[in-house]
Length: 454
Image (tube, rainbow, N blue to C red; front, side):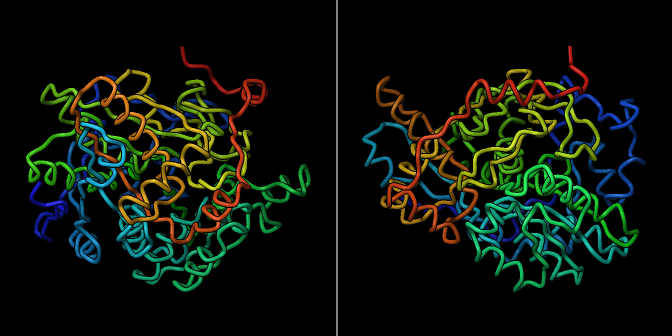
């Protein structure tokens, strides 16, 4: 091919976010009040989010205009590049063509600033003084710290304890942008104290950290909460990725047969796949969109579709999602951003309707894929991203077996230069194959008393 790198100019940064709900035949079910278990309206979210984000959360509009100040901030790192992975193709000896959209060029090193900047902007517009949040591997916390610094808002981050200790330089990065970072569970909140009373050695989970961040926000009228994945408005903000990717694939004279992204709560998967799913829904295309998750936290492939809390303590509205149960505490794998018990509502509905696919991988297979990618393409991928690479390799090998020259697009959602301890553990033989047992999933789900969806 002529150009291995496919780039866009600043004028080609999307001007609107895409809301896939407008194109869905089966709309997501409504959230329920955690106490009454009756459907709730936008007003129930007002203590946590600024009104403009609440409007986006419940919007049925297909296109939401990106504010000029947000789009100008995007120009720091957007548009992001796309590459043809020719060296990886050669190593696999596959007839498949493999591309990857690289979000690791952002200041925080991942796709997360696409929504962090937007959320900080809307909070600033409403006079919010402080934003609380949770973070797993630290990528979301880093992104929000970066965004809050731009808009002069205090930032308080509850980082899952195991990741807090595994990835100390993520904490340093957040501190550099002015954020306070705490290893969750903490003694700063009633939620944290409750967890520590039950398990003093708790490694933490995203669900626990969400409980702590929400509690802090709900107790102060000048403080709001920000979520880095799962919610509709977050997924929508990320569609700048896929919209750029559609243009870049067109410039390459190609169209993916398969789009693959890692899956934690849904933001990076939605970001790249939803604009391609729009082509399926509007134009009758047949692009396979695959969510790639860890076998230690397989909510899409082994969870159940029912109402559940987004946090561990039960402070959030009940959401219709694929879940392993809000009390589920995943194994402390290095892919901290994928250690979440549930899936975003919109993604869950798409999976239920068989409009997307999901697969799970063990961490050893993922790191093997990450090492191969590093050796062939020169970029060290984040542990989360290695899941998508593992799926792409699996699909590329299938193409080889079947003699099919399909086109595969990977979402390389972040780099792994703050995750080298993970690679060191893998190379030193300290990591082991881990797949959550059927008994562990059943035990977690047995604790649920939330509404079952017929």
